[in-house]
Image (tube, rainbow, N blue to C red; front, side):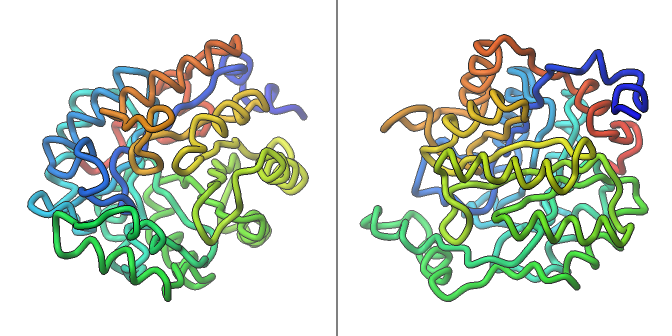
Length: 320
């Protein structure tokens, strides 16, 4: 049975590309860009503008509004989630990755409380190197930034099988579906393991992550290998998206779209809008991604089309 026959709306969404915008994240620090949103108002405004520019999904982290330090308390998310929901139809994706410095019990709290349509889920432990960024800056605006980066020289971003099971057990019954973040080929096999155990259900939203130190690289063959492996493991039971870190963002986005995949962009993943040019907003990056998609003769998926493609529960079933 084909995917179209299982899903009567599949034909209408064929050729539609989902843009996810990751608005602020927990990797970049305020010193790196004056355009990185850190306050609730900035995060909300950036998210709304990204949705207006074509992002169907908004992937959200929170930060301390005074210092920009990652903040994974539900209270921090509550300062902007209702405003974004009221102003857009975009599907909200809450991080369970938080920061590599946090324990899983802390990381999962916002998604557990707010029951979003989507939550990110890292599919394996990795060395998560940010320490090499320290040498690019002589001074930092805030005291937490340098230690945050330097500590990753000896840091494993823990996402054990037990951690993954904990997040699934905490969130799955809420109707939340997952953006399965795969930083390496092995993470696809980890996802296959959980699928074989019946703990996750298709369609799997696979977010392949390229270019972070400790994960798979950014060569076109790396991207193709990820896609081939996912095709072999999951057949027509997954929806593929890519995240290119840093300068690779738009190049990898173009390759994904050309291969029939979806795109994630945003200031969490890259601060750039071209060689040596800082992006002044998330919306600027969304517009660049949209030009790639439309230049290839495809269309950008609306939020409701993204919900259909990914079998999401709908924005009226969240808890914010």
